[in-house]
Amino acid sequence: MLSIFISPFDLSRLASGLVFCLTVMLLSVAFAENPAQTKTVPVSKVKPQTKKSKTQKTSVSELKDRKILNTIDAKREKLALAFAKLHHPELAELIQRLKKHKPREYKRAIRVLDTTLAKLDRFKNRDSERYRLTLERWEVDSRIRLLAARVSVMGSSEDKSELKSLIKQRVALHLEQLRHDHKMAENRIKKLEKSISEIEKNQESMVDAELKKVQRSIKKTGQPNKNKSKK
Image (cartoon, rainbow, N blue to C red):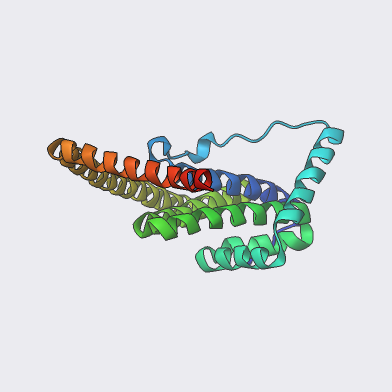
């Protein structure tokens, strides 16, 4: 757990890594909306952003912070923190510490969590199984990213077995997601085949029915003009 002492310097390094890791986790959720593009992102291939000049970095960061403050109210901030606390307490603890020591990184982390929560809500409303799988994947990804960030700061070798176990869970979840997507695709194909079959069998009657609808529509449209001409 991160309840042990962390120096301000280490917290700064961990905070920078955490915000980037949260962004990568958000991309995982975004990929889940398009299963054909879903890929597991290895920890070793996460590349840091290139550094910009101090003037440019400050101006861009300030603009982003203003945008974050304008779009996220206190209620959504509270929901984002509650989400992190429920599904990854260790992450929530670190984010709370960022609020005091690294407010800019705190705001960015809240923004990423808020966006993640919104995407998960959309899954919850349209596909409960996809919601469950995506949420579990987020939890595992969150733990992997935070553990990797912690190891990079503290250099602990005791976390390697836990990291391997988490990656194993992520691969299993990815397989389960693909199977779910395959099942959904099969159901979609069955519906399409049924629609095709119904049209092929009843094509003439469907044409007649559509023609009658169009003719009724024409009569209704022309009726007011006839009444005006009589006047």
